[in-house]
Length: 120
Image 1 (tube, rainbow, N blue to C red):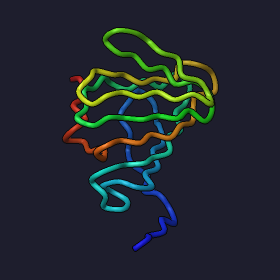
Image 2 (cartoon, rainbow, N blue to C red):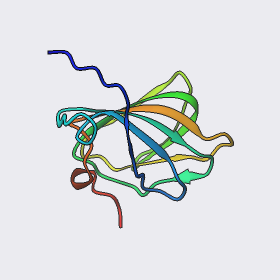
Image 3 (cartoon, rainbow, N blue to C red):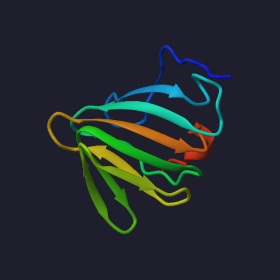
Image 4 (cartoon, rainbow, N blue to C red):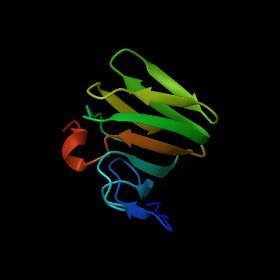
């Protein structure tokens, strides 16, 4: 049966500045463990700890630039572009440019604090 999601759950974010996470589909808002879909709004200068998650993350940037650091390279993903971070690989996200960034993140399986494995 189809389910309409009328509003997201706002989730506290990790990182150096307040970032807004609005989870539409996932463990918190809809009870789905297989996938999470969230709208992110990150301010300029935001950076989160590195992580080695058990889930793959598919990110579509809608506004601004999202910087994605891996063990091999640093990518600048701009509005209209996307990036895939495979499960098990180290990654760190940030929004260093003025204006920050707005993006949609899809995690498979769904994001959870127990499976993100952030750096200490």
